[in-house]
Length: 168
Length: 52
Image 1: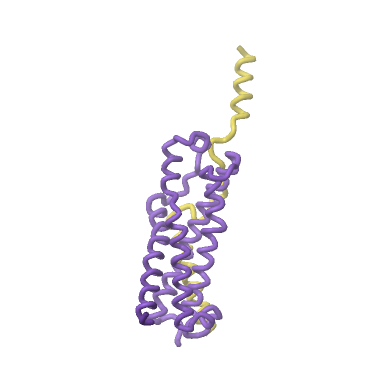
Image 2: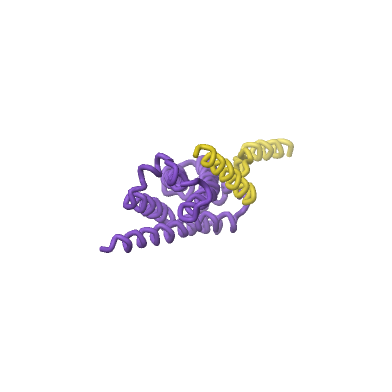
């Protein structure tokens, strides 16, 4: 297959999956701008509408979109022969390299911080009500951390092709 | 009567909290989250330009 088609397809997948993933974070911030603590009554009654809403908002699509975004990004850099220099933050690739490190942190945050705690909040993994209430706070902070990290990440991605941050 | 009131008081004191309280952070509001993101961006851009 034409190498340019592969590169274009990877970029397309990277953007599309990234929009699904980070768009989910921004939608959360817009819809629930303030911290809303989970209540005991919500957790002890699985038919509670608030709990049902929480359950319905959970979807594996967002977690897997994170993996697709991350993998496609790494593949783009690797195919172009930029990966090593980017990860070492060498001059012309420093911005996208920093973006790669931020994206890696965000992806690990989703899978190894947010998701294990979210499983307890939603009752997929047994836990006491107190622990589930505490886990809800951890998932909130983990999600907001990713929203915060996405702000510099998007700038690093944008600057790669359009310049402006680091002279090559 | 007094005994009933005392029992009720004890029950109410033993009731577990409906929600847990946590130390507030800038992430507790949308504005705080965005402000943290912009501040982090400024620091990282400064570092990138400073190091290269």
